[in-house]
Image (cartoon, rainbow, N blue to C red; front, side):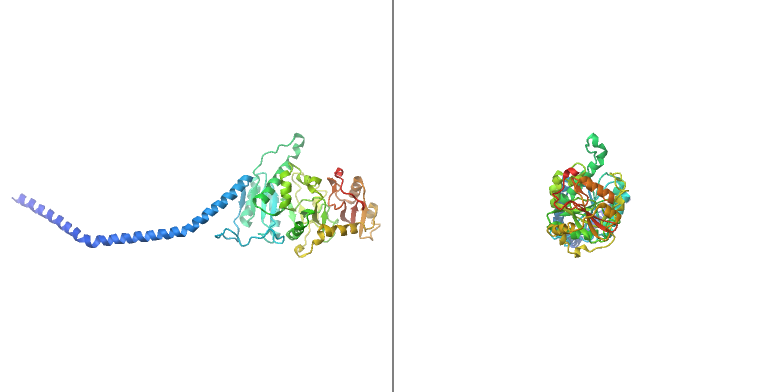
Length: 457
């Protein structure tokens, strides 16, 4: 009986406990569950609202990303077509905006504000490129108007790493020539393979400037040039003349006969020349559109001096060079460096050319006065100049009629005696002007001169 009684008590307790739990749950249901459900619904509504707000705020960003993607794809397509490898630091002062444009963009049409990039041609001389870049950046007055682009050939890693430091620290652009193959050079010219590579590099780099970066003009320097303090003033001012005078096709910073003691101490004196100088020079887009499609495989500078390219056009050059070369080691193996190039005098004064009236350089203004000046000078002999017997005459003229006569005069007076397609270095209308022992000497053909003879080359 006790056992049955104990079992009965346990059953009663079990049933009582279950009834109690049932009543507790039933009684709690109507008051608690709806509150928890309402709280969950409130949270879901809040989350939905936040998601909708986020979607709205991201919609504009998504549109901008799509636009950026389209622009990037277009740029990549252009770069792909030209095999361009570009490394560029982000602009310092231009912030992205809804239009994707910059308020600081300069007009290409105005010669006083046209963007004139500096294209530096480089290869495998890391110390040289640093020296050149340091001066280019030191004297640069405006990084927006004069962006610096270094185009590197050769694939030389130490030089590339050196250039990259300037990309990071100064925001320059570094592009690398993708074709590093050996050019197909005929066996007799194998020793000139370096000149083939240089010509190929120039063509590629200039195509980037005008067809990828879309500039209207460019100033070309090489990685072994020093520049003067007024380098930028000189090119900015003469660009005005280049745009209006169709008889001009370039501006050069170089005087081939600009050795110390053979130039006037007049940093403002500028000339016209029929000889293409190079060594720091400027051309515009129209000239590249003309020359680019027929660019030569080698010796590009001599090719430019040929009558088929020059077409009787001239360049502007300074009396005092705005560049000087320290590149004894290079493709030319130091040709002319020790005897001539290292003595070229680099201007060290700042001339505000952009504030000067340079309209006298326009052909219609320049030519009549030039002829009047040259053929109004007293004619003297080489001996007179050498001995100083006519020293009282500040400016004189020595006449030549043949190629050999000119070469003999040049050798005696220490100027360059070579011809390129019949044109002497620095010559204008056949006249070569320089200073000798303080006297201004003009070696000139007869007044009835009929033009250059390409066979004299």
